Image (tube, rainbow over all chains, first blue to last red; front, side):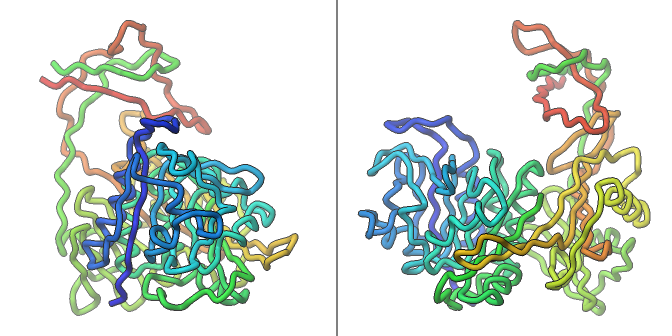
Length: 231
Length: 227
C-alpha cells in the first residue's frame, strides 16, 4: 500500500487581525478529508485551523516562506477558505497575519519537495477554462501532479472533503473523484482539476487515470498541463 | 399540531398544509444491493461479482465494469461503469442540446424505473470537458467527452434538493449511459400535516413560489415544531 502523508489548513472564523466573512463548514471539509484518508491508513501530519493557518505555509523559501516544512512536506494537502483571483494570480485568505493576510500563487512552488496533490477548496482557482485562464498555473506547479479547485464560485457546504478523501483512499482516479465529490455538494459549482506533465501524453494520462498509488511517478517538468471540468 | 415556520423570505404566499414526512431508516445489505441492482441486470451474488463493505456503505461490481455502490447514511446508490464513467477515449466530442440530453436521461430513468416522472424536476445539464495546452501556447485543444443531467426531487409539488433528493444520469460522448446516481431518502410516510406557515420573526411572510421550469428558487430554511 502506498502511504500518503496529508496536511490540511482551513479557516472558519476570521477573528483577525485579517478579516473576511466567516464560514461554517471549512473544518468539516478539510478534516473530513484527512480523517477519511487516515481511516484507510494514511498519515496525518498537520491540521491547522483558523488562526493557526498561515500564508507562509504555502510561500516558497525563494520568497521568504516556509512551504518546505508544511504544505510541501506532505504528499496531499487540502486548503479551504476564501479564494480570489486577479490577473490569473490565485490568492487565499488568512485571519492571522503571518506574514500577510493572503497568500498568492505567484509566490508558490508547489511540489518542490514532497507535494503531489493540492486541493484549494475555495473560490476562483481560475476564472475561466480557456488557456489564458489556466496558464497562470504553469508557474506555481513545480512538481505537483494535480491541483484541484473551482472555476469561479465555490459554496460553503460540508461533506465533499470526506467524500473526496474516501474516494482517494480507495484508489479512485483523483480527477474524476474530485469532479464528482465537489459538484456533489452543490451542483451550481464548477469543479476543475489541472494535471501537469513534461509531455502532452503524460499530462493527459495523469489527468485521466492518476490515483494515490502513482505517488512516486514524479512530474519532472511542467511543460504541459491538462485539465478537466464540468460546465 | 406541528407548526411550520419559514425562516426565509419568499416571493409568494406559502401554501397551506405543508406536510412533514418521516424518512425510512436506510438499510445497507447485500440483499438491498441485489434489489437495487436487479433493475440493471446485476446479479448481486458473490459468484457473479465482488462485494466490498466499509464504513461508507457497500459496493458491488461485476466483470462487465458495471457496479453499484450503496451508501449507509442515506440509502442512496450509484450505478456506474467503472471503465466508461467520466472517461475520455481521446477522440470523442459530444455536441448535444440540453433538451435532447434531458430526454435521453428521462428515457434511462424510465427504462430502469428509477423514479416516477412526476417526482423529477430538471436542474441542469452539465457537460464534461477536457483540454490540454503546452507552456507558452496561446490556444488549447478542448473536447466535450460526456455529460451529466441533474434532477431534483419533487414532493407535494415543491422541489427539494440535497443529499436526499437528487438523481443524476451520466452519458458518454456516444450518448450511451455510463451511470446513474440516485441519492434519494425513502419516505416512511407522512408524519403529520403542518398547521399553516408563519415567519419566525417580526416581518410578514412573503411567500413560497411554486417553481416554473427554468426557475431555480433557493433552498428555503424551514423550521418545524413537532408535537
